[in-house]
Image (tube, rainbow, N blue to C red; front, side, top):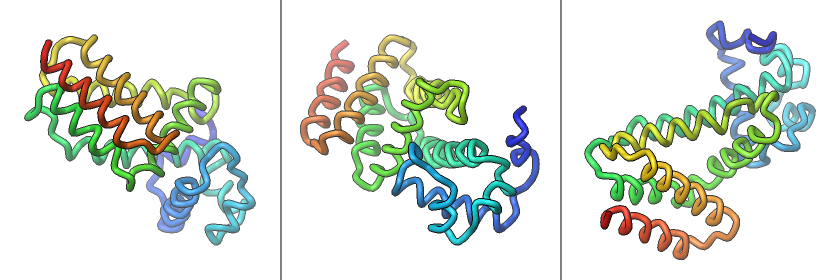
Length: 188
């Protein structure tokens, strides 16, 4: 375990939780790629020294922010019961959540972390992409569809449509593509 992972072994203080929540709100607006402790600290009413004390390092803070984003995603997934839906209906339901404008900031952060995980696998992003693929494949598997190829096709289409939606804002077109996939999955 890295030195700056020690914060995961203890219960966070109220101040640490408060600053993490504020930092999370900040990165949802600003992103993580150009994160600098001084502007972050100023924006959330802290100092770089306090952030380093509480989170161990900038990488430690990024790990905690990524964990927080994943917690938000998983909280939604846990309340969603895919077992009652077949794979096509699961795809439709997931897309409804992914395409909702109120999730854009979280999903942009997810895309940023996913991409960084692929190009910087040793950094604080390590394994983020692989972990989220497993999360979504597990959810799609709860639909009862035993074919890993069909679940992977569903995930790849959802992820591609999401990237396209975030890039273009074209909800109607991307929703049509996901709806077509769901229809094709129903047919065979």
